[in-house]
Image (tube, rainbow, N blue to C red; front, side):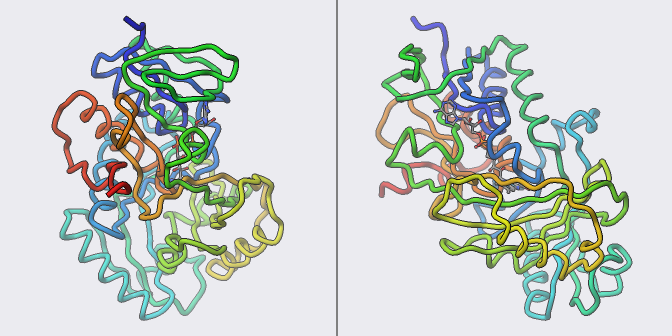
Length: 368
Ligand SMILES: Cc1cc2nc3c(=O)[nH]c(=O)nc-3n(C[C@H](O)[C@H](O)[C@H](O)COP(=O)(O)OP(=O)(O)OC[C@H]3O[C@@H](n4cnc5c(N)ncnc54)[C@H](O)[C@@H]3O)c2cc1C
């Protein structure tokens, strides 16, 4: 009998959440991470916990997960650097205001609190926004965390329940085990692939491709903005299946710094900051908040999202290989959806019912 019930490959936010949920069910877990826990896309992400509603499955997963985050941060929000800043979806014109109304209807019908903002209400809340905007939609229950810290907290909870970690690179996923790059083998009844944008390196058949993103952070300017500000036009660019794009996405960090996002690029795994793309992103952000151009930018970085063809993650058993489970393909929403992912995966592995239907995220949907 092997010592571990489950091997989790990857200690990003998704692998850490899986280790936490699986160990909570009494399973003996080993997490194998080739780098520092939380150092992949998890360190690059903005940490916006946001209910997204592009389709019913995305809404169900993100709403479930945001409720799990609320429980997790609980009485110790500062440990996660959590802030319930809320999101304001900014409408540049009447067409986007129509999109805001549709979004308000969808969220309200699902029981998510939200409030349409006329221009005067928008500017009262966010005076730095440029004049001439059509309004917005406030979703007060959204928030933010510092993702690598949350990943560490989840991993530490698993370790306290007996989970182990191993710093090593998995070279091959075998039947009920893994072969490491150093030649060592580890076995377990279940293997969970949570390797983010590198998942297809281990399983080339996976429909997961990297989508690069740039982020910048400023010096401390407390109160510059108060909510996560996202342009409604973001929805058009975020789900494009090809081509480069930028979208206005501004976040007030609890430190007073302003996090500026973001860009989307396919066909590259080069993590270098690209000045032209960065400039495009910053100019676009300053077009929404002109005073941003006067702030000092301290640091810029990039990360790779793991994108699937339908924008939904792969959560559940591999379609063909017994004992192999997938928790990957979370694209630009994996901080938000990590906790629900882990609950869905742990319930399926244990043969329990899931809180929300698991079918939309099953990896086998691409094999039909
Ligand atoms: C610019 C940007 C902004 C974003 N903003 C947000 C946001 O505001 N809100 C949100 O919800 N999401 C956001 N995201 C998305 C989010 O960051 C990701 O979906 C999430 O971090 C994915 O987590 P993960 O654990 O799957 O992947 P990762 O964090 O990449 O973790 C995978 C881990 O697996 C390890 N690994 C890979 N291969 C192997 C191997 N062979 N052996 C051992 N270990 C291996 C890696 O070292 C890595 O640590 C953003 C992403 C980017 C790039």
